[in-house]
Amino acid sequence: METKREQWGTRFGFIMAAAGSAVGLGNIWRFPYLTGANGGGAFILIYLGFIFLIGSTVMLAEFTVGRMTQKAAVGAYKSVSRNWTFAGVMGVLSAFLIMGFYPVVGGWATAYILKSVTGLLSDSAAIGDAFGAFISAPIQPLLWTVLFMLFNIFIVIRGVGKGIEMASKVLMPLLIILLLSVAGYGLTLPGAQEGIRFLFVPDFSAVTGNTFLSALGQAFFSLSLGMGCMVTYGSYLPKDSKLPSSAGVVTVMDTFFAILAGVAIFPALFAFGMEPAVGPGLVFVVVPQIFARMGFIGPVLSLVFFVALMIAALTSSVSLLEVVVAYLMDEKKWQRSKAVIATGLVMLVLCSLASLSLGIWSGWTIPGLGVGFFDFFDILTDKVFLAIGGLFLAVFAGFQLKKEDLYRELTNHGETTFPLFDAWYFLLKFIVPVAIGIVAIFGLLDIEQPVLMITGLVIIGLLALFSKKL
Ligand code: PFF
Image 1 (cartoon, rainbow, N blue to C red):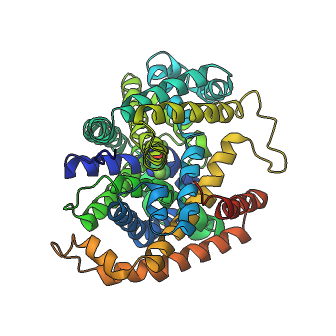
Image 2: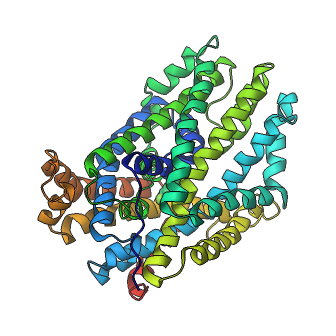
């Protein structure tokens, strides 16, 4: 017997859940260090261009495809044409791969909540080494990852409305308050303007082809696009909810949080004369070092910051877990609880590989690829699968679906209007595919890991050949 599809309870709840998915480690961990490494304002400008032209267009397309088909990633494509199944399967694969490293970082954030108030900040010079020692230990980071995964399982097992929506409605407003307090304090420090200048005055000298690929990958990653996540969330929308304004609000909120994270970090960073371009260790090394110099308020702000980071990560990782769970429920008719537990366990195995690849296996790389598991999962999804997944979705919606059907879905069968429809459709059908194509070529010419890129393309090719039955 078909049970009725789960739905979001309210529009506010849906927006919080979708924004919760979008706002995550991508905003608070990755965006600041990419900005730091790519010259600040120039990177942000390119990123904003991608977010508003390509990101918001693809997000609206994902919501539309999801609600129209009432199916999650794989089913949405499959219900239109079996030839497209592979694009959905690629999304489910991306969810597994991202969940192969994301909860590891979520686990670090959870650990740092406790570490903030148990002596981490007492010796600023030792913070870098302490982080290195922590993430490369075999057991401790894994236990935090397990704890973080348990939070995920607990939320997703309760379902769409009572689990994901309820958690997002509480956690997202809390996240705003927490981050605003850290940013507000940073802005009061003497010398903070330097950080604002770094964020908002572009310097194009650090820009290369790879900067564009990083900015595009980051735009997709940050908005949770290109892997069926927003298709899945869209499939739980009631037929009378307004899609265009929801996509607009979620895009703006995600961007707001990325900039807010920048404002929470860079003014204080410059005020204390620290280096912006340190890479992935930025929020776990430089940020605690800043807090360590603040006196008694330091541990409090550090605690607030890492609670915010953990919350942001959690509302995103539940959406990644949900992509796989929804696939198993829709296509394989599994019970939610069975799907959540089985998927969670597989993800934990991947996380163990990723975590160990930073520690006792750090000298070892996957043969032929030159990177360990953590980087493999990260680079493959961020630099290859998400942008290409977005390209597939745009081509699918633009060329496989009928324009009238899209129009009808977007206007709730004529109940509402969408004056920008023609512009959106043009962007979706022509600009998005061409732009992603150009950036991919530029990126490939300027690439650091050619073998990894080719591996990604081969995997996509294999999926196209063999995934029809999934
Ligand atoms: N958008 C999340 C972030 O910025 O951290 C990560 C993410 C979630 C990516 C869900 C993709 C996804 F489907």
